[in-house]
Length: 201
Image 1 (cartoon, rainbow, N blue to C red):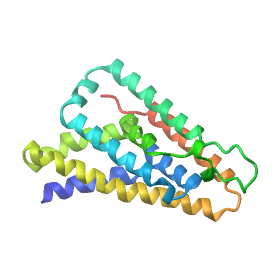
Image 2 (image 1 turned 60 degrees about the horizontal axis):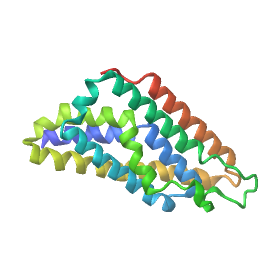
Image 3 (image 1 turned 180 degrees about the vertical axis):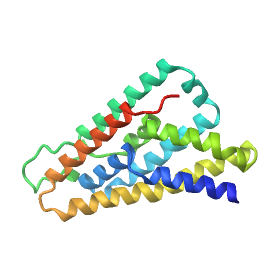
């Protein structure tokens, strides 16, 4: 039980703290509201489940052993997250034409699925969860569901909270174009910082 609580505390801290995925979730909340983000949040959870399967079955060892693959992955990750943020840049100066009414800029399930597999912070937290906490839980048949379900639960809670915060901020301003632009620029800066200061293997 102590081993599992340690794992859960680690996951809750890592998933709940600011990072590219949470800022994208917050931006999605600003532009389309919490209810409009259910598919995107579901995609984030499914993407992390896939990432856990990859790491759990040993792919993380392959990635950390190849610096070229690591570098390519990091730049692909940054490019995707920046594109995801920039594509929601407000194009209308008319407040009546809110971003959440334009399906071309919606954050959807398919966008969420790709975020965590391309998120360096997600890779670091999953590798640490499997390397430092999972072995104390027992054999692999117990580790796999406990790690995956713990991540899924924490994601459901914290990604929803970040998205709800964005939705609240979006509703708090009659003209939220500037807020959306600020969130986009902040997301891009965090992604670039994660790229520059990514820990080496």
